[in-house]
Length: 430
Length: 118
Image (cartoon, rainbow over all chains, first blue to last red; front, side):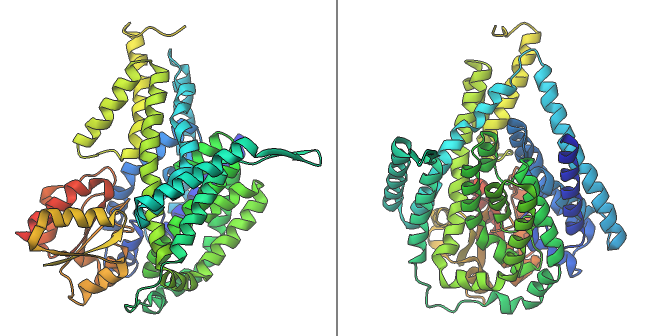
């Protein structure tokens, strides 16, 4: 099984690096807009690789790896930000593509085995903090369901946001109290968080659909960039294979698309993880569609719906088929999606607000989770260290992205108490 | 001077911050990223600001596509706070569209304004 998992990661990484090398797909939404500069010859490969590195490396170290460590599931950012760098740094042409694939495969295997080795090493330390580190994700797996209410608050004011929050909360409590019942001998358990999220999303979408398009001329993106849209269509077979592989790997619980579903998968709440991934996907549609149309370059995970499908389905082979179909539909419908977004500007704005709300929510939930985890590892010291490191990061101008400070500080706490235990400053709890 | 806020997250907060610092010196408008980039292209506005999670994706994608890279600069990335000398350099090079990460906006916006208002 372990061999199959490693092989999966290798294949996913190899294809992703190849696609980046050929200018077909990049993962980082910030790198995608620059790709045409390279593809159309206004930028050298060296400059492009330097940009990819600058944009991605910090996130691999400061975001992808800490989350993957706390849950021992790979956050896809670890893999795809790396393959963005590898794909841009390898030479042009078919040969370059092959080199990118080979290096990509090695990188994927390295990340997977490297992270496993780190976890094993942590487990051998005198103070084993891996179990307590799981506390980092605890607040997230409940609190994630509030983000639609926050997105409503961003878009339509605090009052409507609060109303959505209260309705979502009521829905949650109704399910907690009355969500377990038996029909014809079969026990049915409805899920409180999934329901709260669903109710919140429906309210957000109802508000958003009601927003009328302004009278000003809308710009027809698809007509403006028709050659670039054609370029994505031409590469569709590659993209569908990529979607299939990502969906299969996600359904095998090897990787997760975002920190929320990652923590939910770890807790075994696969349906919640699927709903969270689906809601997040809605947040990414406008961003991925507009960057793709304007650049002719797609993303290895598309609009991220492949993750939701994989988690709903569970079976790797069926997930793979669904993943390929989903990416295929996304690409074929790019024009229709862009037109739809022009017609319903509320949905486009909701996309941005969903992403803002999710990251704000994660910043809070992971800080609290980080504090709880650190304090479970080392009572007293934990709160002291995480609070201190969080604010030091703020003062330093945020060299680490805010949402990663909690998890990283908890890991640092774990390492530090081990050092202290060795020199006799920390008594190992019996 | 007319400043448009185009991409993508925390647009209101970015616009408020610009207004607070620039005061009377700038008129600030929030638009969709496409409209904002078109406003720069048609010379209806002078500068474009955008925040997102990468500093260059949601923030600048449309600006780069419509105005070319030569007019756009990402001045902060995740884990890479903005640097005064870089901002000065980009402004001197004639960049008119600026992207940064939302969590760096309190550092980035004053830096950019300082150089474009100078």
